[in-house]
Image 1 (spheres, helix red, strand yellow):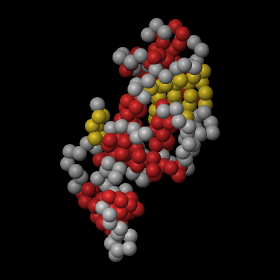
Image 2 (cartoon, rainbow, N blue to C red):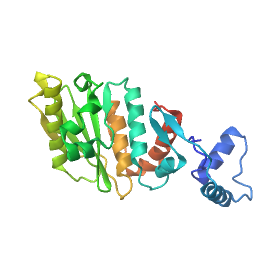
Image 3 (cartoon, rainbow, N blue to C red):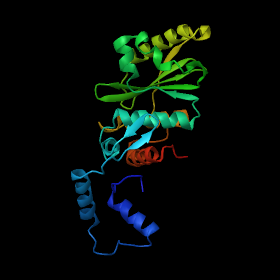
Image 4 (cartoon, helix red, strand yellow):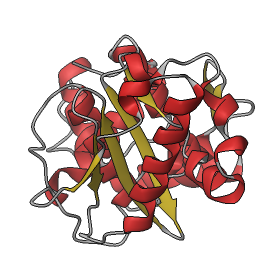
Length: 246
């Protein structure tokens, strides 16, 4: 149902059988929970050989997709392929930076990352998305090009101001490198408050992807912690389908 080899819940299996197989097992003496656990155990001991979701230069194995289940921490591979789907959905009016970009910028400065946009005109985009990973926490920096506004989103309300300053310095250097005089001044930083917050220690990456999805499609941030299980399933299916759902 979600593009997965793994049934995600007993309720999902019952709904799927009733809808697609005209079979209602709800009243029968069938221990679906036990069957699901046996199936999971079988996959864990003998995973599907060579299975991968491949899109452009991205490749996701079952281990990567498994980070979307329950309350696991999602990894960089999930973040970056989903960013690729966001760019495709917006016809590349939005540019999503690889999750390793900020680390490289901090480690080697502008010279260490300027080739990352060799074939990309950032100044023709409407929105830039920078996923930021510090230690064990994900946050998001966005750049609205029309208003030259750098915005910071964090699902725990934490503010790492040095990250927004790093991005501003990068944009100033990029504007100088690409001879974009109008973008060499006038930038402002905005710390976004009153946004959906997580209530656990495992969903920060999912919140970042949902911020990215909503902002890139100009939708309000109308979701909450309670929506996370459904959002994880939707992201799983979108990655397996190679496209964002409407």
